[in-house]
Length: 111
Length: 114
Image (tube, rainbow over all chains, first blue to last red; front, side, top):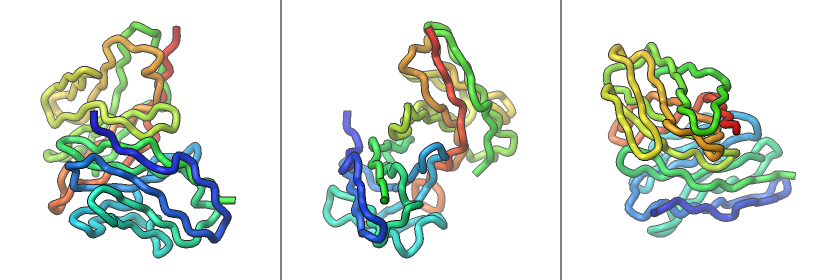
């Protein structure tokens, strides 16, 4: 069964550093998403991406965040200058007929 | 998207049916009811969705009331591996020409016990 994959599974970084989280969506999907979940809190929408551009973003997705689909398979989330409050699980998802498929997540820890 | 209300937690004995309720009294005519679950910080997993008819797949059944103001997710024979947080989400799947986001609430924490 096809699945969304994410790398790395765990990223530890120092405050102020840039991080790039990577996702490989399911190959024939056209809509892509990033969500995050701070420990003990709800899953929150960050951004959706379609046709090589952002289709919707939340208030969380400020100028420190960017997304890119650099080639035909990868979908990345970049945080330019990480803050302590960026520590969370980050989930990538892609949309297929009737449902969104989520990856296993990347746990980002900002020290 | 319409707001949903779910009980914060439920228990179920293994092998029994788990019935998880959801209220969505402000649902509009073109909004679907979706159910996802999240097992211990893993990525959310799609379970089932429906518009107004009852639906069944290999994981669960979805019962939607005739007025569509509430629904019930049924796991017919719960196992320990079904212990998870279950989210009921109401949304229009395609909005403004694009597949819309999912808005997660706090869900129902289902604990399946021996």
